[in-house]
Length: 605
Image (cartoon, rainbow, N blue to C red; front, side, top):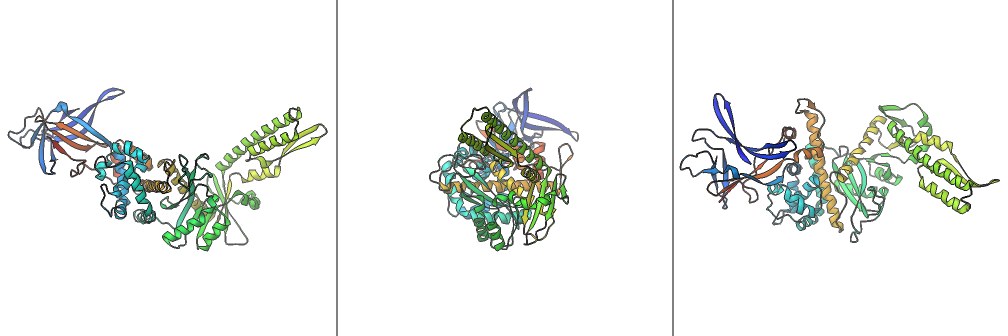
């Protein structure tokens, strides 16, 4: 690492600019990389300084220090001048900066720093609990891990101690666990605060609510947690105990509320609890609920109507049979190249039914049916051959084997009429396709039906509103993928619930960034580096990946009088990073605040 002079002529005058450079190895050989620019060195005695820095001693007293390279003669008898040993300049204490800094900006944008200061920092603590909560949420957003992983690997590698003003060695797994215990009682206040902030920042409205459920499993027996039960696992881990998480978002994906249930709780049985919970937190209102068909039951719909609410829901396929004639008609309305919809008239009642049909979905379901039909027919042929050749003579064994075939192909077993019969030639297996059911299956493939008590809106509008349910599905994908809510390692029920709350906070930050990026592109599309307008917004994870290369580090400058000058600085962002920060109207700090023990510009004797 060394100081390099850069000479430029401007307006007929020579200027000397100095930069700190290091040599790095690359696949193409050694290359030199500029770490930071230290300023201009003029020839006049008064301006012969590289950079004026503010230096603090142990007592916190500040003074100015002029910095010179060792080969430059400083002004005589100037006590503010230091001569630098160029061959001993080094870089120390590199830390991840960009991603955790962005997470903290989102934290402040949602005013979560103020919120947690009010609810957690009433009593003086060695480290304010509001800042520990920020560490948990930012970790869930940037690099999800356990509390032990935060202490041992992630937190020491980040600049959060500088950004949050936490002294070195103060973050450990015990303090993180205690913070989990402290934030959990404030769940309802947090949900109300986020709802208000999303309204202020984005004009978000919560009159249309999307409701869906997922599950997440726990590692271990979880004997002390009665919530953990075996049930329908959406993670394809039926061997593990699990819990069910219900999430409510608005049509744009902004979180409204969430709830946790026992792992064996059926989806359909959660709706009444959720309705009561929402009324308790936000009062009675004429809300529109958009639900998947797994949550729909007549009891749940009646409960919504009883509260003056409205709904738009999917229906089980078994309810499509009465509308077979409607599927055959040609009065469909095409809303997309591969999507058709139509209203279905119901003589009685105040509900409207909408039939929908998707070409891509039809082809997929047809391919699945053909694949399972081929497998079942091959199995039936093998069984029939074994019976005909006498390799299988016991009728009970024949029927048990037939039962296994039918149980192994539940997707298509209802399409076949199968029986073991006595004939003149002996016992034979007879099977045939039920043509009426095959025709009905062909009509049903690719089709689904919606049901609503909304009085206004065309079939196209109602279908589009139902498609907003994908925002809830996207929320779960973010929770499970980017935010890694699974698996759970906590054993106690309150800690598991607090873990879900931290994941909820991480999602709140994630969706904030998502809509900030989307809004900036919508309002004013930013030109790309090549000069072509880029109308596609960054994804949240791509944004974090882009800023992850930004580092903070200490530049250590040894002097000839035995001192070391330490400058804590941030690496220079690339052109793409600058354009991204400009898009979000964010500016990197030029330097860290020099009034903390953990991050100062200092001269050490």
